Length: 366
Ligand SMILES: Cc1cc2nc3c(=O)[nH]c(=O)nc-3n(C[C@H](O)[C@H](O)[C@H](O)COP(=O)(O)OP(=O)(O)OC[C@H]3O[C@@H](n4cnc5c(N)ncnc54)[C@H](O)[C@@H]3O)c2cc1C
Image (cartoon, rainbow, N blue to C red; front, side):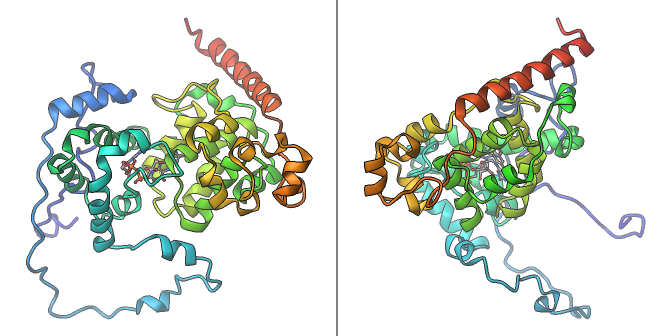
């Protein structure tokens, strides 16, 4: 429209490394698998250096009349955001500070990126989402860093963000619908009480509850725990992934349509390059493996703080004496597990097999 009006208008891509739609398979199809997309990106795309910050951004000589920001009353009247304010410094300076901090730690990324009890990741996601730092800047700074030899795994993760935007561009319906049509028939069992217990971090599974409470308090959750909590909602509780995606959308400071959609469809097994549905995260083993001492749980679920590492991820396995000494009364101070893991797993697999066999019938899959 601007051009039709004779106004010189040009658009520049700064929010992504590669314009969505510009990478395709040899058959001219959109990539649906990450690794070939990543390889194609490395082979075909030269990421340009970011341009220097302009000395001056010319402002209009007369500003149009406008409302003041506070007139929009965007801030909630009940102040629930203290934890978010403490955790983040929004803006370019905050993004720069995070990148500088991470620069020193990048060498350990591969070993620590899956540990929610350690600060192993960059926490740049909200800054990238809001454009307070660009992916080109991150890409080149990581490449130039003193730890650049260790930058590969980190850059690969940054390219998952590209892949998510690429998928959203080609399959915009996936924000609402599964990419794999057989999942349209999935026998979800929507239930407000289950959803609520999950949202409030009261499922009785400590790693799930810790993640949901971290999310509520800070607006962010560690990637490993996003996978575990999403899997728990979808598979243990059989709640539609869209309900989980909506809650993340409302509560994440990095809520991003492309990344959130990819994440949820990946866990549900209904998306591109997704985890197979039958891979059901065991919240007890995930906790033991990625939060071995239980420090993450103790931080976010203080009612379990006095429980030792052997029982922290499954408090119901502790003896009455141990529970009493830790000041825990299951069902009162901390919930009993909302579902039994083995039974929930069996129920999820049965639902999945039914979906698959119906899907197979329709598509006569070989
Ligand atoms: C169910 C689910 C929902 C998610 N929703 C979102 C969301 O709304 N917004 C969001 O930014 N990320 C989302 N993610 C992806 C990932 O969890 C976050 O990007 C990551 O935890 C952000 O932390 P970080 O900046 O420390 O990541 P780092 O490990 O430091 O990674 C650097 C950057 O790479 C990108 N990135 C990393 N992992 C992924 C990934 N798996 N998919 C896409 N991009 C990635 C992010 O921009 C991130 O800031 C979701 C993942 C899951 C499983």
